[in-house]
Image (tube, rainbow, N blue to C red):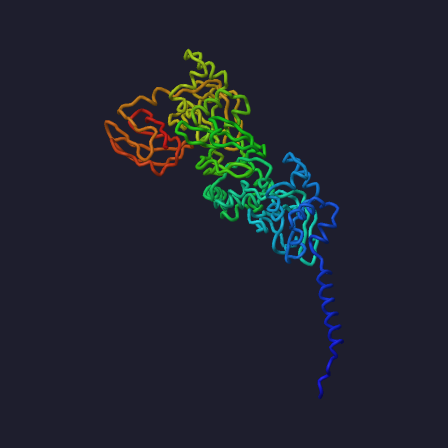
Length: 521
């Protein structure tokens, strides 16, 4: 069989037709710039910015793209927030970086977006954090997705209502520094859009992974299940997480003892304590690292998860017990009594009760606050556990001071010589009974048959008990929990395993047992 020879002229025209068809096919393909952005009446500013930065060609020719496209209103909003206009935005030196921060080098349809997804954009300055809320809303950082899946041959466009900036936020601090539990909590609570807002300012008190583990142990679930809505509903988790966030930047240098500050959820306030030792507390949580700065705020690390619970301290503050609240602040007892994980019963003297005591001592409230045993006096008003009035019985009740108060129910309710005027004001971490006098520890507490001295105070690694005979001792924290016990004469006691804070050491050798307060630094 002979091969058919095609005339050269016919071959040339055939190749030309093939070439024309190939070129036509290329130009017939749609792309995210020409067929979505440039044709949209709502993306004129995005189009102008892309053209100015020479990025339009890349969006026309690059395969596998996802573009999060801010609307004209989004550009107007950020220009206003920055105190400029669209021309000012177009003059930003990092405009190209901002624009490529809106582009992924892969096709991500809306069906592939999951809550907590962290995506790598073409800009390598930062990652994008995606949120899918329980009601189906989708966010890219702080920007809400308003339209999805505008598909072309080289990618997909999703419309967003805000311009996202590649700034390092407080969320990035958590993610980049291994705060895995906190990052998971922020994702599960759907607070990522709030905390990634590049134009907001925040102070975040960031609990460590161990702090969340301690909470999980208390709840009785594995750490990875703690943020399941079935365990802690999303709204409740938002309240817990939001409690850790202030809506302003507060560096450590601005923290003062007794400061009461509002957080972004507004359910309760945060109470700040700066102890004489230099230790800083937010409610019951100790600050362990400070001033980790980001572009939209500052992060301070804490060792316990805060809760928005109303505590016995809140009862005093919210009901006008200003003398008692000031005394608690001065005595550095705020961290103990704001602890949401312990229960307390507080016999709360009124302002008049403090004034009457001051007058009897020939001083004023400032004189009372200067008493060296102020903390011991206050702890004499606190009993471990929540004891309602219906649970009270005649007899002695041990206090966190170590000495007993006497309950007498024969005529009303008397605590020593003070009358309970209002009972059972309940808080989330206990109960408050209002009394008309300040309770003072009886003389019996210092009536020793053995001379005892304890030093140094404050202490770091070791504490010494010096006595004329061996004494039994036990150490409690301010919640009343025994943390150490033993017998000693003139021996050192290792306290290296104790957390920083105030403790009571109880010794035998007197009518009621001697109680000393010391600070572990």
